[in-house]
Length: 63
Image (cartoon, rainbow, N blue to C red; front, top):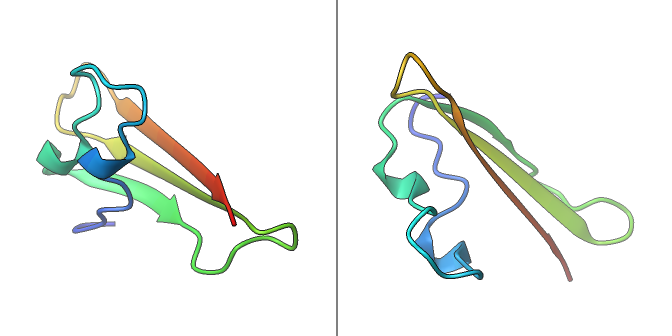
């Protein structure tokens, strides 16, 4: 989905320098508009910039 920005640097709860989805140019993914019955919301973002590797960012929250 062009332009999807499901997650960004504010979700880097572990620190480090491996969480940089906002730099992706070619992306696809899923961002749940409504949480599940137990309040869980999930997001997956695929960074497709490099043809030799796909970087996958996963984020889930409840509440």
